[in-house]
Amino acid sequence: MTRPRLTDGQALTREQAARFAVLPLRNLAREYPNNIAHYLTGPQDARPPRALHPIFYGSYDWHSCVHGWWLLARCLRRHPDLEIAARAEALFAAHFTPEHGLAEVTYFAEPGRASWERPYGWAWLLALAAELGAWRHDRAGPWRAALAPLERHIAAALPAYLAKLAYPIRVGTHFNTAFALILAWRYARLCGQAALARAIADYARRAFGSDRDYPAHYEPGGDDFLSGALCEALLMAELLPEAEFAAWFAGFLPQPVFAPAHVADRDDPKGVHLDGLNLSRAWCLRGIAAKLPDRAAALRAMADAHEAASLPFLESGEYGGEHWLATFAALAIEGLDS
Image 1 (tube, rainbow, N blue to C red):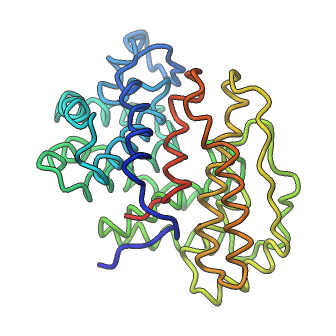
Image 2: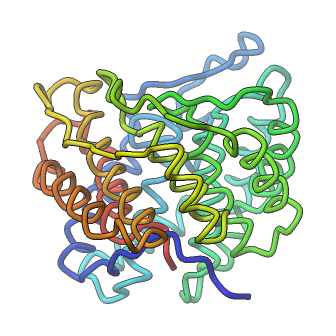
């Protein structure tokens, strides 16, 4: 199977991978502080994060922990000789066990939790599974196998969710539909999930195919880390043939002009979302540019400006940004390409 290319960016350099990997390695086993989003079914559920989620209890919240593991795996897959490799592999071995994986899927299966971490955490879990599947490490197979029950649960639940999602969610935060579908589509293509890929493509055409004149001038909101406009455009860039996408984009964003967002306070955990916005915009702009050769130079220049505005600030000293921003820096540089 031909692997999909979701950006025209370059692979992470060894220097970048070493810089990025340090942050998840520092945080994946850090249980507190923890912004736990937890649906209690009864008093028996009043337990600490590590007991509820023996794999994904660190990095401040569940979804950030998931994509922190994705980032660590990506950095080691790109550069297996990183100095932190032995420590990282030991951490994977301690967390990704069959027992821990069963506990993670059991949490999802409890009554009332059908929408928990949907769709952002779901999509990152699938991205992590795909990353482990691509990693040529002796133990990556068993580590992925530990996730397999939850991977199957989410891959089966996503088409059912799309079937009842009458309106796509366009916000610039975790509930954004297009962002989740980009990650899930890549997983479906890489992992041979043809039915899931069809469900995503069908939904995207139905939900976004007739969109015109997107009011992108209202972006960003004060705590956005995603662009509703650009996530949608990147999804359509991946799903449509080049000529069809060019026609769609001309009606959707006739004059795309995006300036880097100003981050007023990197000590504020919501304000620092705007650094994530700059980095995710850079990723989207580069992916869109790959399908629009006539506009590529201008789009790539915008991407470069966005990356430059926030890439220097990953190590802010504030946990509100340090627990997650490096993932989006990796997306900005090389996207989801494998």
